[in-house]
Image 1 (tube, one colour):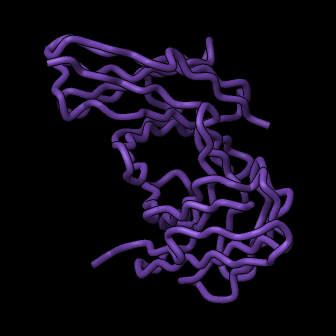
Image 2 (cartoon, one colour; image 1 turned 60 degrees about the vertical axis):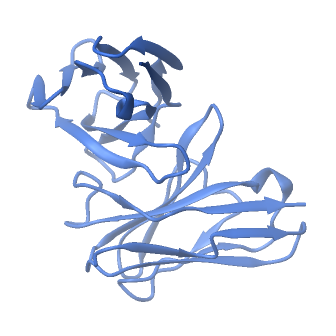
Length: 114
Length: 112
């Protein structure tokens, strides 16, 4: 089954404790992206990746890191989480290394930073 | 960067009526405009998209129109049904990079 998976689905952590949210897709997609969703703000792009070892900043990259060592995986790293990073996070992927094709979203990761 | 504004933020319609959501964008280089539907507790899903070389696109009860001169695009849902109740997001992507900027969303409620 073609899908995008994220782990964990729910996470409660404390300020400053490094965490990683994993994202994996089995569709051989070149393009992967991370978004955060906050009430009244819609979806905001954090980082995206055109292909392995190619990443670029979205609209809200501050406080986040990403890596793309393998085509299927695109982890999101919060080196020192802060309460303003409490949000719902979505990973997405699409083929043809463009967002101009259908993006498939993962199920989301709800993060609470205390 | 691109700035996408979406209106209205909430929309309540009677079942069978039409719903219209409007978005404006700031970057004249944007050339791809998708619309996503997000049901409560679910992930966003693409419902329709339009590229800048097309003025209108239809898919059954859903249509999208694009006015590049005015830099706005709209989603039209006809003969609304209860299952159309969801949050709808518009987005825009410019040609020069691969970012995707979303509007803030419209919560659509279809009253039976």
